[in-house]
Each structure stands twice: as C-alpha cells, then as structure tokens.
Length: 464
Image (cartoon, rainbow, N blue to C red; front, side, top):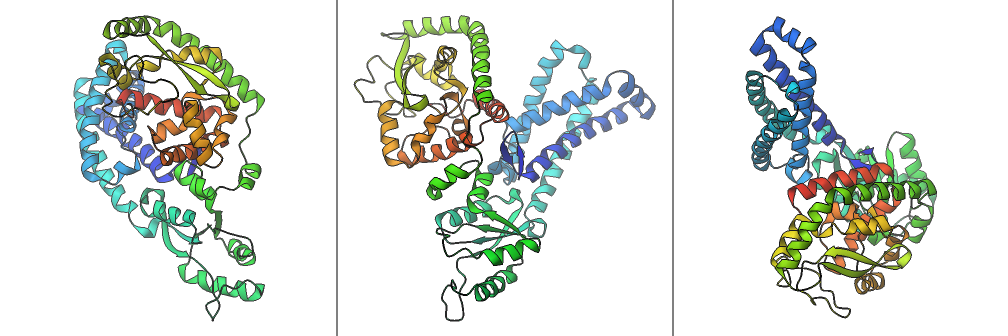
C-alpha cells in the first residue's frame, strides 16, 4: 500500500493507472507517426504543441477511467464489467474533448490522428487489462502474509485480503495458536516458546506476519517475532494493517490506549485556522456563484407545495453542541415533528415532487453554505445528525463521541466511502471511517475527499 494525501492506495492499482496513462500517450504518439510519417510527426510534436495535445488527451482518458470506477477493486477483477465501462468511458471522453476543443481549439488533435489513436487506445487498454488481471491473480508475484491470531480482527483481515488480489498480499495461513507437544499454549519458558513459534511459522515462509491477537497480555511471543523481524520478515500490527487496507479503524478491536497513544487524533491550531479560512473563502465564493440557482430552487419549492422554503433542523456539532442546519425543504410540511426523525427511504412518500429531484441532485444542501460561512460546519468533516439519533448512537456504539472533536462537514470520508446510513450497524461502520478521518485529518485528505465528492455528485450516487 502507498500512502498519498494521508490515505492508502494499492500499489498495483496506482501502477496500473500510471501504466495506462503511458499507454494512452503511446497510442496517440503511434497514431501521429502512422498518419504523418516520421519526419512530419517529429515537426508536429516539437513545434506544433503535439506533445501537449497528447498529454491533454491522456489526462482526459485517465480522469474518465477513474470516474467510471475502472480502478475500483469491485470492478477491476470483472472482465465483462471492465469492457462495458471501457466503452462508456470512451464515449464520454469524446464528448468531453469536443467541448474542450470548442473552448481551446489550439489544443485540438487532427481528426485523422485522433481517430487512429482512439482505436489504438481501446486495443491497448483491453489487452493490457487482460494481461494485468492474469498477472494479478498469480500468487508467485504476491507478498506472502501469515496472520497470527484468532480474533474477529484477524478473521476480518483474512477475508479482506483474500477478496482483494490487487493488494498484492497472499494469505498463506492463519496461525491461531502456538502449542507444545501436549497441545497447550506455551507461555512459561521463553526458550520453548521461541522454538515452538519458529517451528510453527517456518513452513509458511511468510514475508509478513500480521499480529491480530484478541488478548496480547502473556500471549505475544515477542522474542520469536523479533528474531523473525531480524531475518527480514515484516511484523505488522493488525489494527494498523486493517486501517491501511480498508481506510477505516477497527471499531470492534478498538482500545482506549490506542486512541491515547497512536499517532494522529490531534487537530493542530494551524490546521484549524486553515480549515476556517478555506471555509470562509469557499462558502463565500459558492454563495455568489450559486445565488441565481438557489433563487430558482426556492421559487420551485414554493410553487410545488405548501410550507417554508428553507427546512431548519437541530443537529449535533463540535463538542456535542447543537446548531441549526439549513436545507431546502424536500418533504411535505410537518413530516418531522417533535423528536421523531425517521431516515429517508428510497421511495419515501414524504418527498415532494421537486424535493425528490433536489435530493437526487444534492441541490437541497446548497443552503448549508450559510452554515459553513457562519462557522457551524466545515466543508469536510463528519456528517452531523439530529440529537435523537446522536444520543442513540452514543449510547450503543463505543467511542462514538469522538466524532464530535472536530466540526461536522457537508461532506466527509465516511460519506464518500459508505453512503447513506440507517441502522446502528450502518452508523457503527460510518464511525470507523470518521475515526480514520479524525486520526489522519490534513489538507491533503480534505482535497482527496472533495475530489471524490465531485465524482459522486456527477454520477448521482448515494442520494435519497
């Protein structure tokens, strides 16, 4: 895994993206030579911005491939889905570049070169994807991992690694206990324990050992692990491995000491100042640009149904304090009364006609720009809930109150990875992502979340 912008990405997937960007450039470079010949192609590339034009096309292809989830693990290993999305992606690239060339005609590739390059790109990418998929499933090229422990975390790690071959880690076994000749766990003699652990580990020949014991006190074979580490075996904590692989913290295996002593979970003053200034600038600019659209939306809400245009609702924010959240009303007036706020369903009868459209396009959330301007929220942070839901979650989910140590956000790490949440289990999963964000909070992670949010908005995902 490679850490970038304080998040983790599979090295093989990044390599795939970089290699495909090079293949796209190679395809159009080849097309230029085929169409013009070596001498004329050299002149075009050197003196007519030919290389810049090819870079623009390559960036367009890779960006559209990302937005069509062609680097997502659930799509990556499905050849039929890859083929379908490749065709959709190429059509989108043509539409995007047509608009781009209309605005910047000087960067337009000649039609003949573009047509040949377009065909070559399809061939190159499909052949390379097939080769990559074949190589990706070969265990000979994967890192051999041995999981030490039989805790829920160990089982979750084993399942995660076995279903994601693009991570490049092959689970060779799960060592649940180390026993002596009588079948009992050795905890008394360190010499005997050392020999038993080494004898148990040697047949697996691991490159990495992931320690995921439910209870380590008196059970962690420290000397054996140190000796294995000195011989080149990587020793990794199970919680760290889980966080790296999934982008969330292991809620079920979380200990107070981990929250206290692990790196992160500290919001520095410069970061707070940056987030406040960024919120002021972006919300002000957003309000100026969105005011005409907001005026039209307010008119549509008013004409569509009886009731106020703006829906106001108490939410829980920083340090558990209440604030009033603003949204365009999307339900019939009076749907949420007293302290009863049932989550929205896919086909909720409470939605108005215009409200259903607003929620699908997320335009109902535009008034939250006022909340961001006022300082109730940031652009990026944990999603705020109503007091009754927060109270219920804080009573049933351990460490839930840790979400309140930073201001809530209009979008966040949990929103772009988890989507809509209804049940306690959903919110428990959401907390795992929120704690990952709070632990790794940074400018880079905020930018990554905003980039992912744009993707979700453009594709219309996760709305209700």
